[in-house]
Image 1 (cartoon, rainbow, N blue to C red):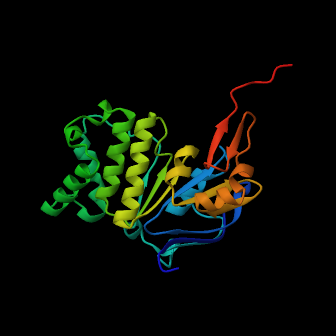
Image 2: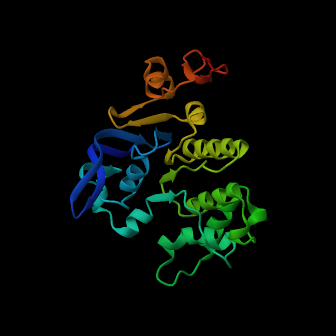
Image 3: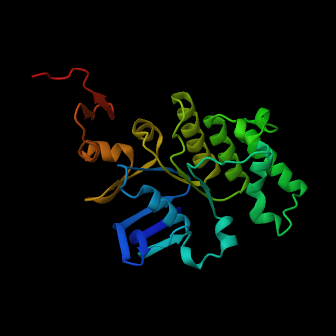
Amino acid sequence: MENTAIQIKNLSIGYRDKQGAKCIAAGLNAAIHSGELTCLLGANGVGKSTLLRTLSGFQPKLSGEISIFGKPLESYSGKELSQTIGIVLTEKVDVRDMTVRDLISLGRNPYTGFWGKLSDEDETIISESVACLKIEELSGRSVHTLSDGERQKMMIAKTLAQETPVIYLDEPTAFLDFPSKVEIMRFLHFLAIHSRKTIFLSTHDLELALQIADKLWLMDKRKGLTVGTPDELRQNGTLENFFRCEGAYFDREVGLFRILREIETV
């Protein structure tokens, strides 16, 4: 497809150690498209973070193919990769004596050369990234004074300053209150559509993903990877079969989960 940004074919992911390879998931086939927000969903331990690290080149694949804009991932140099993929992780940045703007400016490192001197153009891009997240009032604050929501906006702004066509995010709404979750997800969807960026994120916020994602990747230890739009996966029964838990059921009419309030007693 013309707007395919990321393609994986028969991909196996996992770890290698002295005892050999430990496979977390195998036979993964899917594509991520430019201009779409794609959400990766699955139970804890299914391999979501491992998949993200593998797609970003942080962790080697066990087998299979990963291509970015038609080019094998392993053929990218480190500099090319840093100018192609921006990554926002869940780990908190533990720094002191650094302002928010200083940290966001690190997103320009792939372009500033050995000495890291910022040009007028770099400063403009940093300011635009700050304005895009509407965090101008945070620019002079120390990073360690930020709330979780403010910190997440800062890290996304840093990635915007990196000017990559692909952005991966690992649990970007973790630790946020509900209004902040909605704000971040709506912004990422807006960014994907209007900037034609490829945005791929893992999340446990099922309800938000169902309402805002363009595509869902459902990852399961037994069934592997299932891909589709929220409507497709709702209508064909995939969602209600994928997410089963006692005390809740999937309502196909509205495309959301309902919680049973009453508990049966013996």
